[in-house]
Length: 338
Ligand code: NAP
Image (cartoon, rainbow, N blue to C red; front, side, top):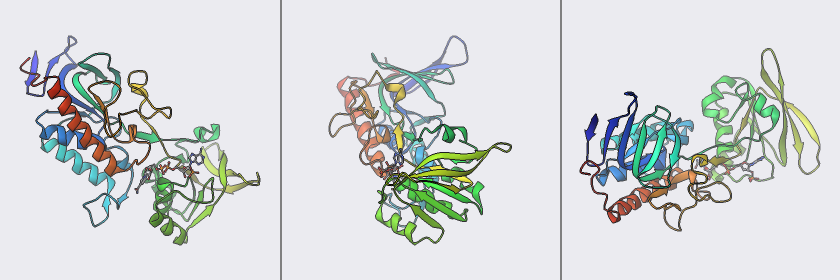
């Protein structure tokens, strides 16, 4: 049984009568700024792209609050709102948005085979990988033991629980400084622990942080151990080591937010497309082309330099344009007509 016959995709039920196999000209994995922009451009090229939204639809911007550097908005906008707009725009221009999670890709030959948790399979003539990045952890045993019980990597998700309490933020980049500032909306005191004596966050954010009366910074220090209690399982403090003097001190805290950067979500593609030594997907210079012809990568899964919403969106645009050229060169005009 066949479903919709479009110029860009068609589907049929699998033998189990439950899941479907969908043939498409362009499949986009991921729905952050890169994925949505790729979907908008591919849809406007009449390619009827399918965007598989993943576990965290909208990507990292959905777990931030104020966005002040996305061009076009003089007033402060909210990350979740921006992503809602991007998805809405993608759908309005003809992209098909699918709420599913990809668990396997097979890229040895075209069409590429993409398997999802629902059992649905996508056979794609071209693929845009826009799976983004996920928060990194310190990998301390005590950090893992108290994850979800006072240790978090997302202030916007969990900050609310720390009304009137003391919290620690570990890190010195934009994420750490933004999370520290956000947490002042709830917490009594926010202590930032950074391993060096200078932040790498944008100057404007640093200045806001230094001026904030609720925030204290402990420089040249690392989190050595999370201190917690059982029954109820909760964080009570942290052991901090000064990297210059090796002195260890304990401070009390109700919550600890780890904000030490992100790793690319590239595991699904390891061994199939070339990765850089740091795990980011390797692309050709000034291009989103990966080592597999017809497979393109955009946004934080490939970008270890800029990692901004606007650069991710730019790369999504490039990936869609490159996919369009690839399909034209390979004379993939209409799936339904085959
Ligand atoms: P980041 O810029 O890579 O910063 C990570 C921070 O964590 C650094 O200060 C680093 O210290 C520290 N760190 C890393 N590993 C550590 C470890 N094992 N122990 C202790 N500290 C450690 O990551 P991010 O802040 O998540 O930002 C990622 C990207 O997203 C950046 O390009 C950032 O500009 C962008 N971003 C932008 C915005 C915005 O524009 N508003 C908001 C959020 C994120 P060192 O400084 O010593 O290396």
